[in-house]
Image (cartoon, rainbow, N blue to C red; front, side, top):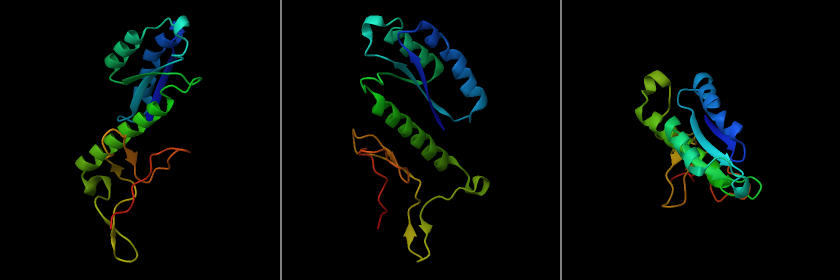
Length: 154
């Protein structure tokens, strides 16, 4: 599970609400929920009231990664969502690596198909080539996204 906790860099009140929203997420969501803190409207530098450094410090304090973005000008929008997916995939992979299949019921390793040919699980997190991000196998990539699900291994 993942959240993008966003505030408006031109509105101090929205920034001040981040701590409360963070508490709500930690109280009512899964223990391993992943959160990114995003300062939106970075295209409005002349009206900025929350510095990048202040956002970065709060993210560090809360244990979140930090981005600044502009939905209007499409700055860091895709990168923010892709990073959240990458973090979720990393955490899922870590959980599967350390989970006891007898307790969780998790299926690890190749799965047998009706034809008896071992196939990789369809929901694996796949490491990406250097610099290209990662992808969740079995996930549906967004329109026009270069990220594709992992191809079955032969």
